Length: 51
Image: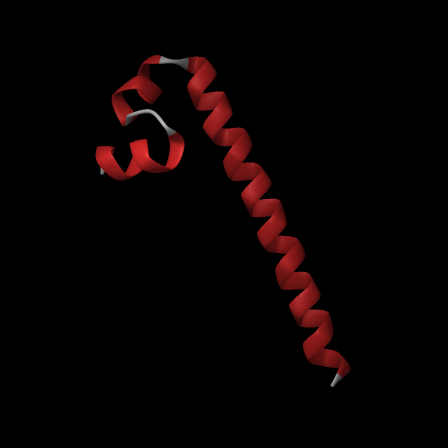
């Protein structure tokens, strides 16, 4: 898991646990990804109901 986390975020899980700055960075990225996903889902829903 640590290797995959490092590949995605550029630092390991142990580093994340010890750094408030890194936790904030990861959380900000997760929030942005979530918002993009929600916008995409809304667009797909709108297209599906148009016919």
